[in-house]
Length: 437
Ligand code: ADP
Image (cartoon, rainbow, N blue to C red; front, side, top):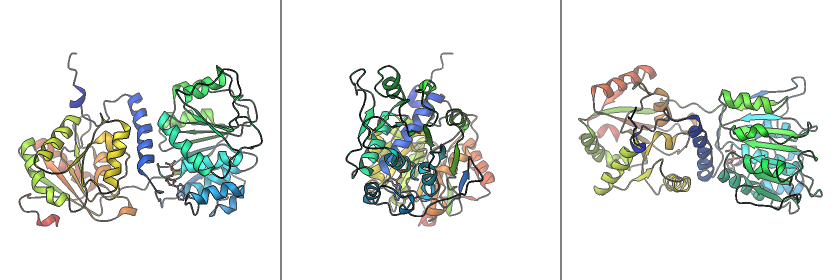
C-alpha cells in the first residue's frame, strides 16, 4: 500500500516480525546469554518430570559422583568449577545416562545448565576406542555451535582420545572419507550434508546420542536416517506449540522435563510516572533524573531504534555517559555492550524491546520507560512491562520504575497498567526527586 515504514522507525515490539525473524532472535538471545553468563542461573521452581515409564522409580542425583562417570570426565566437570548438578541436571542426567538409553525432551530457561548436561551425556557415552562418529549435536546457529563446542572441549579436557568435529559452514571435508571424530557438533544444513551427500558420517553405525538444542529448523525435516536405538535428546529454553509438536514427532517415547522460569513480580518495585509535553520534554526530565540513574544502574526503553539512537546521541551531547544496545548491531557488538553493562562499566543502557528481551541483567535498580510498552492495537502491553521492570524472587531487591507520559493516550496506558497489576503508579516531579532517594 506504499506505506512502508523505514526499518529504524518501526516499533521494536516484535509484533510485526515474521516467525522467521523471531526464530533467529531466540537463537541470538540464547547466544547472547551464553556470552554474558558466567554462572548458573538459580531457580527455585519445581522441576516437572513426565516419565515415559511411570512405573520405573524416579531417581535424581545430588552429586556428580552418583552418576558413576569415567574418572577423567568427572575431573573435567570439577575442573569447570561445578560442585553439584544444577536443578535440571539433577533429574535429566540420570535419564540421559541410563542404560538402555532413554529419550528426553527438556525445557528450562537459558543459563540453567542444559548445555553442560548434554555435553556431559555425549562425553560419557562415546567409546574413544571407536574411531567413528557416535554423537551428533545439532545447534540452531553457527555461533552457538562454536559455544557448545567449547563446552565439550573444556569438559572433555582430560579425555584426550575423544575428538570433536565442527559441522559448520566453511568446514569442507573430503567426500567419502569417513570422519574419525566421535562427536560432531554443527548446524542442521552442514551436518545433514555430511550424513547424506558426502557420507562422512554413517548414521546407522553405533549411534548413541543425537542431541539437539534450540529450535525447529525446516531443513531438519530431512533428518538423517538414524537407527531406532539412537538416543535422542532435545533441549530448548522455550517450548511454544510448534516446537513442541516438532519435538514429539522426532523424539519417540520421550521423558519430559520442564523447569518453569521464576516469575517476575512487581512487589518490590516503586512505580512512578512523569508528565511531559513531548519528546524534548521527556529528554529534559531524563536529564534531571540522570543523577539518580547513575546511583546504581539503569535501563531506558525506547519504542524504536531511531528513538534509542536519538536519545543516546543527545544524552552524550549533554555529557552523560550512556551505552546503546540496538537491533542493527551485530551479535558480537551487542554481547560486548551487555558484558560491559553487566560488569558495571556502563551505568546507563538505552535499548529497545527486542534487543533486551530474554536477557537477564540482574543488577538494574531503575528502569525508565521513555516510551511505554504497547501492543499492536496501542493498548498497554502488560507482559512486556512486567518483563522490563519486574524482579524474580531471587533478585528481590528494591527497584524503581519511571514511566514517561506525553499524551492522554500514554496516561491512559499507565492507568491500564495500574489496573492490571493492581499497584499504584505515583506521579513524580522530576524537579523534586526526594522520593527516588
Ligand atoms: P543453558 O544451556 O541452559 O543455557 P549452561 O549449560 O550453558 O546453561 O550453563 C549456564 C552456566 O552455568 C554456564 O556458565 C555453565 O558453565 C554453568 N553451569 C552449568 N552447570 C553447572 C553446575 N552444575 N554447577 C555450576 N555451574 C554450572
